[in-house]
Length: 149
Image (spheres, rainbow, N blue to C red):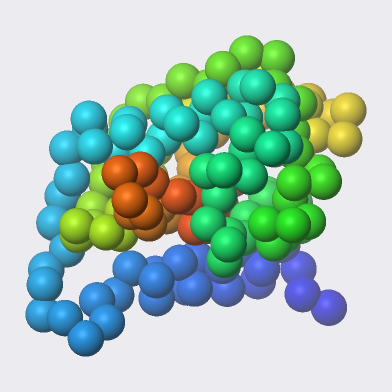
């Protein structure tokens, strides 16, 4: 049976693979905070709405999430188990790298939410991958390290 540590290691390895350039010698560079927030803010706004249709619009078709308890979901599955937001999340300590159409962010989130009626740790690190789509960004993968319950 796969434990939480194994699941998280596998997820992080998969996310690292997403960050590798494919067919391009283009280097991944540090991205400014304003660009990172241009990806994070629409996602935070959608989650704060507590509306699955709004959240769906900011998720890529290939979206996956893994939570600190080892549970993981595809986009379709995740939309049925969204956290309940009591306030819009805030971000700090943002570090973003990527290229023109892929961005990997690590950051600290301050949130007030519950998952399956269980409180979620208010301040925790997160790791997210975004892909540029048109003028906006879609969330491709997300790792939450927040304790649930």
